[in-house]
Image (cartoon, rainbow, N blue to C red):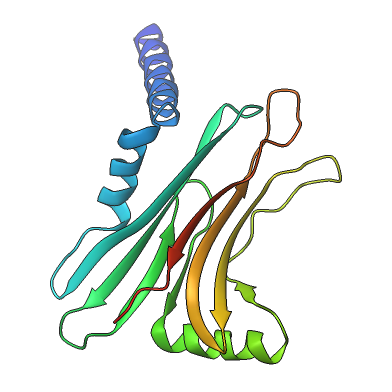
Length: 171
């Protein structure tokens, strides 16, 4: 009986470990579809539209980082919100009114964009990783969204930056 419980516990730990490995191997269309199914699913009265997707692998951690950007429109009010989501890092969201408010503030400060959400920043001076959600403005009006991503090669050098640029959606 005692050995049966130990074997069951070992098998459970092994199953959890293998499940984690399988999910970390998702990339490309499979990873995009997984994120879309979790974060960009329309449900009454909301209509979700995928605006863009970006992924990059950190070779040190052997981990894919992926971000999906969706527009969620309320079909009753016509209002919408842009959602940026990921399974690994924090996301953010911004509705039309907040986007206008932050854009006007950035313009007054002389900035062409503002960062929203908690940026994924380096852990030390030799760590080159960075993921940011940038919202660009022109004349105090939202213009575009940029997901900026830099991860690491196996020798710890920075990979070339990857960006996803999306026009700010119309109502």
